[in-house]
Amino acid sequence: MDTEEVTAAHTSPAASSRGFYGCVIALIAFFTLIALGAHALTEFEKGLDGDGQLEQPGLSGSSYQPLGPGMTARYEDGLWVTVSIPERHDDGTYSLTVTFKNGTDEELLLGEEAYSATLDVESGESGKDYAPGHYVDWLNRDGARHALVLPLPEGDERTVPVRLKPERKGDPVTLEITPPNSNYRETAHFQLTLG
Image 1 (cartoon, rainbow, N blue to C red):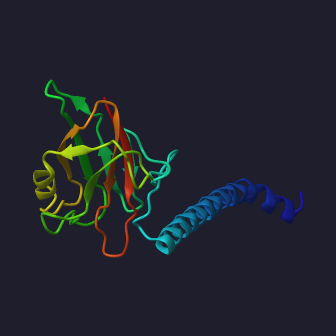
Image 2 (image 1 turned 180 degrees about the vertical axis):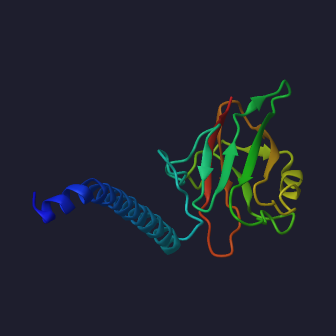
């Protein structure tokens, strides 16, 4: 047996084992870099259009594709807004809730004063400027807006009660929710039927 054959025979299993582990480590590093690059690209894309954009599966939440009762508007920065299904009362009024869940990485100011435009109720269908024959009275407007004045801490949620009385049963109502943002935040539209 030749000296080279003896040396190769003794080092071959260890060398192949090191080569295998080296390839595995290289593959793990490669896929980790791809994942980090994809995450950085996603964050860059979000930065281009701003964190205040709605990020919805299905309906967009725009005035022409409003969300319905029980649905949630999801913003890119982690804020979620959910409008409950309206509940009818014997006196002809309806109650529902709007829940703000702060999944962002900072405290949010939902309304800096009692008359902020964070939450608004409009008669009629979403996307229509005028709803003849439809009128809804927002019975607790001031109380709902006052509930939004205090800051919403990171990781916390706040539920705001809304009480409405439509002119007649079956009237459509649109809730427009525009949580403030230092740059810009899209308005989420929710269309409900009271009846």
